[in-house]
Length: 268
Image (tube, rainbow, N blue to C red):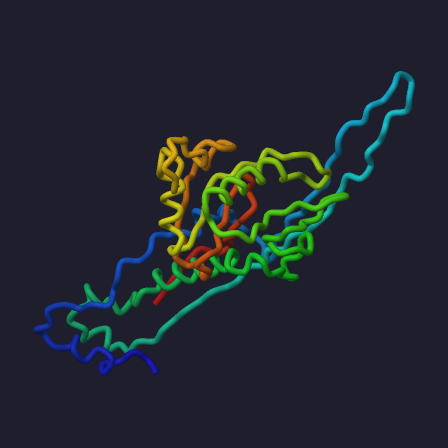
């Protein structure tokens, strides 16, 4: 049933002090986690390649070692999700509303609705990070896993530990020391941003905003600020994370992508 006069009966008469129900929205957060790209295809595919491994020692006159294992390893699929929302409103409800500036019949919060929907879909990537999605494909592992396969070995980006000074430092060091490409070569990977749910924001503040070592009476410097280059982008709190304990480290590697094929549009 369309929005009609009975749905806005008190907006048809003068004398209302005001109209409430419109609140300030949470600033955009997903675009601080994902790298945004434009798309022109219904399905985007990204191939991860294996390049050459380490060079091999040889003696004078001996045969040169060859590495012919380069080539495609995994393909990641990004299929667009279409979101839409509409509403019906009667002409009388539009014409007879005396408070159009406060309750705009031609925009009942579509922008806010779409914005928060994007936030939920974006945060869902992290909320389900330990669950493998076969539609995405890739290396056959969840986004966060202890055994991402590379040639002849595995790489972990998963730690089942609570957020504290020790675990954050260990994670920052692990990013630097353990991340390798498909051929097993170390890559330039550094932690750049800590992402936490609202419940862990006080912990993040203590870990990243103090000059001295947090939680101790020692006069040590806070190593979190400088180890492996620190985290140049600090931390951010995501209001749409569902776990009160899960935390994430983004690195300088462009791994999380948001592909936009059709921008938000509305009509009446």
